[in-house]
Image (cartoon, rainbow, N blue to C red; front, side):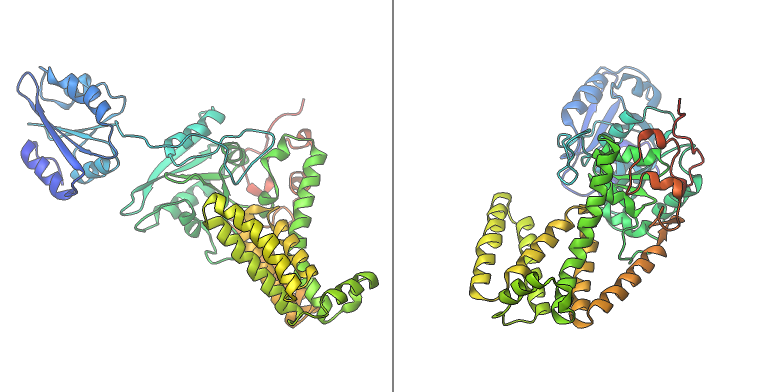
Amino acid sequence: MKITGKLEKDVKTLKEMMPAEDILTFSFEATNGLAFTVVYADAISDKELLGEQVIRPLLNYEGKATAEEVGKHITSAELRKETDLNKLTEEVLAGNPILLFEGMDEALITGVKKVFARAIAEPSTDVAVKGPREGFIEDLKINTSLVRRRLKTPELRFHILTIGRRSVTNVAICWLEGTTPKKTVEEVKKKLQGIDIDIIPDSSYLTHFLSSRPYSLLKQVGTTEKPDIFCAKIAEGRVGIIVDGSPIALTVPYLIVEDFQSSEDYFVPAYRATFTRVLRLLSLLVAIYLPAFYVSAQLFKLQLFPIKLLLTIAGSIRDIPFSPSLEMLLVLFVLEVLNEASIRMPKYVGMALSVVGALVLGETAVSAGFVSTPAIIIIAFSGIGLYAVPNLIEITSVVRLAMLLIAGSVGTYGIILASAFILFYMVTSDNFDTPVLAPFSPLVRRDLRDSIIKYNLGSLETRPRTLKSPNRRRYKNG
């Protein structure tokens, strides 16, 4: 539907298309008698800027009734012409007022949107002792500016598209031309443009559509809240996705080794980074397997325990009314409930609840003889170990529970078979033609220099071969 040029009729049509009470109009006349009407959304349009940059300059307008002449008198930095009424309604609902005037079949879109944004701060989920402390926020333009500030190159490209029939959410696809494979960029665009959904409130909604196996247990899309990590991943040849209204940016292709790395690893010596990465891996493995092996050893293989430890455990579990597997499941269930409650409750109440649950409830349960001290120690250590790799908590907590159930019913052989199945599943998983378990499977020796083991910067002169970047050279040594 197009603008007719008849002011009253066009304004009436727009009000019928947007009958909400917060969609307002303001009509005025210029010195030469030309009638204008501004249509805007009350809550998300900056009325002060609208008056200073649009209305006040046009009150003394004496020029011709053309969009070009009127636009010369408007001081707004963002000014566009549009004739489609459907697109004009989208702009009004996005916070950009539109200017209509008698006799013209074009409207002017003024960029005086009111910006609601919190201050840029360090993200709570990705804290680093050394390195940049800025984090993404919920505003797309600010987030893209944080990326542009770190990558001051004309090769940095942004492709903006809208997703969501009702939310009309802006999504920015980000990549480095000449570094990111064109096939990956086109595949990301194709998947995002094919989404037909009502609303996109957060970037996590897009992970389902970007995954080749949407119901996979493994992650297939990388996430980060830090612009420095986001830019580093793009510079390696990945594609980034930033969603308006979400502080979490996405990157593809995703490698599972990413979650064992930290931004701080690149600001400390290589040996220290290697030590912390190995520590994260070992913590995760212990967190998953320790409860399962403890239960399996009690039920099937007591000889796995050293004799002194066996006597200590035997004395602790002597009067426990539950079986080892049921006891461990009970303690794990209490831990998960306390974790959920402490997260969902108000901040200070949640801290008090954690202390009460850990000390009072745990000590009382042991004193009453419901659970043993070793069970609480093992589950507590397991819970702490999972948070060494926080981005994998959702997956590893499920795997830990599955291993515990298998250990209680089959024993050690069941744990080994389940581990082999999980390893096979990880080896066969891929997304955007990139294996999730690379560079370990398939083995890419060159890429192992920045995997669990971290080499010095002088040994990382090429980009990861796994990502298939057409520009392999990162820098020239010497």
